[in-house]
Image (cartoon, rainbow, N blue to C red; front, side, top):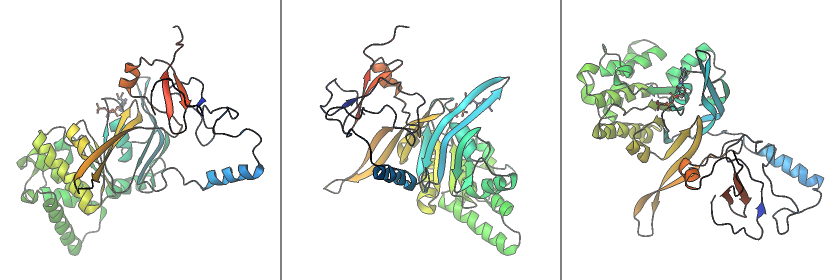
Length: 364
Ligand SMILES: Nc1ncnc2c1ncn2[C@@H]1O[C@H](COP(=O)(O)OP(=O)(O)OP(=O)(O)O)[C@@H](O)[C@H]1O
């Protein structure tokens, strides 16, 4: 999408002025502000559409894979409304998000944008007001108490910002890691040995083997967070969620903790979703999704590319998110730069859409 000079291509089809971010019909049901069918040189032929063509279009729609079919995490128009003292707060306002199995990604956004609300829902600690959400095949709106407990023990691991919240202070690091396995597994000597071996392996893999027999009070903040990651991984969950896990740490320690997430992702294939304000963390993941006003607004995808001389470089591309209803949030700095207020002019071009400030703004 561009906001370029007003030189519409000869085969462009002007669309009516439309609000930049307004509820609209879903793309499945209606194409939005469509180009007139009989525009000279336009892409669409005029005249009646044959029955065969309509049948073909219907079959194409029917055969389209369901939204989020292959994703590990799928949020579809997720809404969460809190009511406090009779006042409603819409923390999530129709948020869409897909996360693939094995991703290492970050969620960023201004304070109050809804990041923690989303993470709590994904962790099974909170239930959305409306919409749909599933993780690893679990429907987060339909779980009964038993399924919710199993989900929280076996499908997701969670790490809080406050180091003191992640570990039980009267247990050693190894005992902390063994606890979730104990709660979800059976007793017996054989299982106990297996639990002890896994705890030692996880602490070793995350670089905190030396903390095996230490209590949290004898560990640094970074060591506690890395032990907390081992606890979160104990039952081999599909996804680990972390809310500002490096928020209490200095930058060097934060890097080590983030290194542990990367290790878990690379060596165990665990999907990792981290809420962060830490730019160095956001820069180090494969995908960073920005949340604004309870919706996903944009995302940065980083790819390693190799040039013809074999040199590797990380290429980052920023995308604006188009939600399931076809809504697009224009970045704040773009709307400010062009003094866009209530509506814009859209023009459909053969390979892009032009967005132009309203040349006849309504008088307020
Ligand atoms: N339990 C609650 N009761 C009422 N309002 C809530 C509750 N939890 C969150 N909110 C409100 O929902 C909105 C989103 O909050 P949330 O904590 O998800 O934001 P956030 O992006 O995580 O912010 P921060 O970066 O400051 O942690 C805020 O307006 C917040 O005040």
